[in-house]
Structures are given as C-alpha cells and as structure tokens.
Length: 341
Image (tube, rainbow, N blue to C red; front, side, top):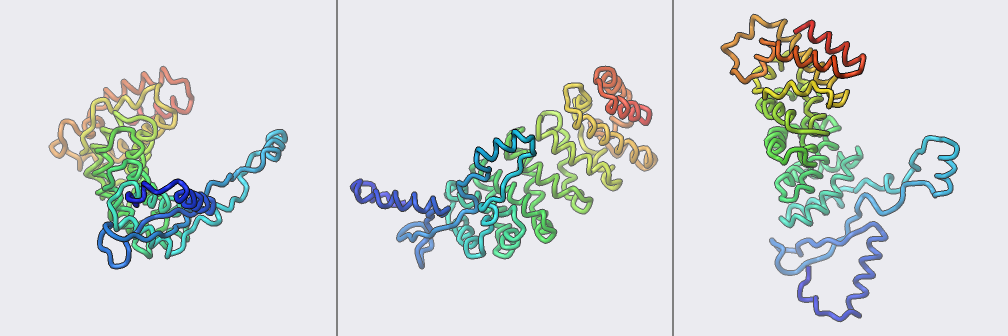
C-alpha cells in the first residue's frame, strides 16, 4: 500500500512485520481506508484494524483426549470453541467492512472483506446487523466481482442470511439476477453450485417459485450436462416445483433436452433416481388431472409436455432401469410410475 517505502532498511521493516504477526495472533488484520476528506484511494491513508470472525485456533480436543474418545468408541463431538462465541461482529466492525467494499474495486480487498461477511452471516445476531447496516445490498454488489471465489462467497453469504424471514424477503429481490448469472457460470463450478443452492433455498416455498419460471428450460439443460452437486440441487429444486400445482404448466412448457430421460440410469445415485421418479410422478399426476386444459397447441415440440403426452420412450427407459438397478425401493417406484404414465 506504500510503494515508496520499499527501500527502507530491514531494521526499520522488522518492527512492522512483528506488529503484523502480533495483530494476526490477536485475530485482527490491518486494512487501508481513505483518509478523512479523501474521495478516492489516492493520497493519505489511515490504518484500521478489523476483528475477523474466525481465528487460527484448533476447535478439536487435545490429542490424548481424542484418542481416549476413539478407543471408547464414543462419537466425537467438537468442543465448545471460543472462535464460535466470538464470531459475531458489532455494527462498527460491519461498517468498516462495508466501507472497504464500497470505497474500492480491488478484488483482493473484496475477497478479504467478503470472507468476514460470509463467516459472520452464519450467526443470527450478525444477520440482523448485516441487514441494519445495508450489508445485503453490499454483498449483492460483490456478485459483479471478477474473482469467482468472491462471487461464490457472496452467494453463500446471501444463502446464510436468507434463513431469517426478514432477510429472505430482501434477498429474494436478487433472485432473477442470481438465476441469470448461475446459468452462465462454468458447469459444475463452485460458483454455479453456490448459485443453485441459493435459488433452491429461496424457492423451497411456493411463494417465490413463479419468479424463476423463465429459467426452468436452462435448469433442465444443466440437469443433463451437470453432475455432482449441480445435479443434486437442480433435482431437489424441480421436485419442489412439481409439488405445486400452479407450477405444472411452467414445467410442461419448458424446453427439455431429449437426453433428459438419461437421469433414469443405473449410474445415477439412488437419491437422484428417487428424486427424478418423484419429479416425473408429480408432473404426470397434475398433467393427467388437467389434461383437458393442456392442449398441444400451447406447447412447442421440444417441451417437456410431449414427454408426458407420448410416454412410450420414457416408459422404455424406466423398464431398463428396473431390470438393471438392484434396489427394491427403486424398482417399486419405477413400476408405480410406469403404471401411471
């Protein structure tokens, strides 16, 4: 931060290094903010210390105690850790973080500040402080950050904060923005998974599901190309949609890749197969119940509608799954779905 000090002697730089080490041992870190009256980062700087929520302390019991627990066959429980008790930052500390984010576009500073915001957003007391100092909109602004790790932390922080009902209502205003970004992130990337997790969380209840209907086609596409957590989150999200009768048409009208039925494969996890079977069962139930309302001219040829209107291909895939997948629960659910198609 002070480039003209680079030529100082080692003797003069050593106390500063020791001071930094001392600060780290206290769990505080130096950051630069604009000096009084300064409108930019040029000119005089002042130093401020911010207490970061998590410090480098072990949360595990001593080794000898841990060994005793293992020998006794006890379930290991983490000890009450001081870092958890001290994880909440007060409003002044939050305001310092907000200032750091607002006054610079430096991604590295954003990353440090965002880490602190993310860690504190786990705790209810801190969630209220974040809301009161306008932190939610600041965290949302970090979604523009060029560093994927910063965007991921911002999404995770929004997810943690949205647990509180008061915050949930504010965070949901960003849902379209999050959807738009999430479908363009690299497939299976950590930032995409974080985005899907937030969308799934915000749409658990039917209240906000209608806000993401324009993205269902993209979610179905990601379901066919994604793997791991990407697929897990999308299936769970779509399953929630399928339980809501008012979402049936939005699901049926969405474009569905022909490879969508490959979700019924023995290579998939049991949980994903069961979720996919429940998803299709729910859609089929509401589709059959309102068949007279849903006419072909309302749907494109690539829509999910025709998978249920002409179910032979799907039924064939399901029979193969029943023959190859050696699990009674899956077999029973497959046979049930085939009988209802």
